[in-house]
Length: 237
Ligand code: ADP
Ligand code: MG
Image 1 (cartoon, rainbow, N blue to C red):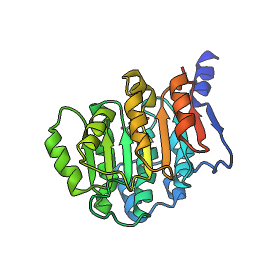
Image 2: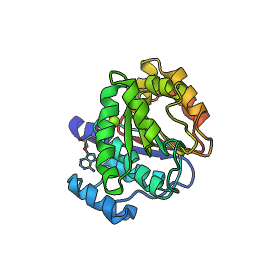
Image 3: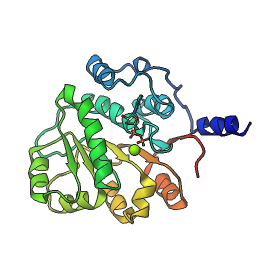
Image 4: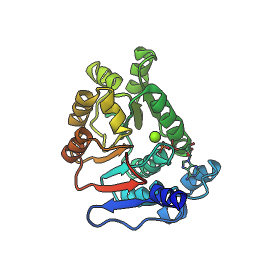
């Protein structure tokens, strides 16, 4: 009946791209190190959500990804968990090199939510996470960035301001996440996003998440991602 049909549609999974890694069934399948597994258990995340099952092995393999899934589907952990693994695989930061992980989100509320999620998984590794958005003292953010941090979570406008102020360099940024890309475009951040991406080394891994894929977002994705795998979960409006 209709209800069942709608339910099946909501579960619809489409994956495209070449050499797509197989989805995982459990967090243990990801081969996460023990401290990360413990942090996941502490969150009472029993099993990965649909987008996480598809996205985690793709991102952990180092591939670029376009992830399309509705709000509440667990996209944050899909990019935060592999980010921790990515950072722990890198040599330690030298002073003033700038972050390894850079996450852009459309609003301060969303940036703050990602910050809280990232902190939980960064904690066992003592990674420093900075949240950078409007409404908070630029001076304090400047000092925090100057002191060094492995992860920056930012709204595009404030990140550009701080880059202009030379609060941070992006010499080591190799993991870039654009979260809620469609909303960032709705808010007019396309120029800022392009400027930020242009300042990050081309050998980065790039992840783009969005609830919808309007033409402009599609065009950006084509320009800034390398051989991405596209994962769509559910019906996209
Ligand atoms: P999205 O970014 O797709 O809107 P979030 O990452 O904000 O979704 O996750 C939505 C909620 O689901 C959050 O409260 C988060 O803590 C929770 N969550 C994420 N992954 C899992 C999981 N594997 N099991 C249970 N809850 C989860
Ligand atoms: Mg989200």
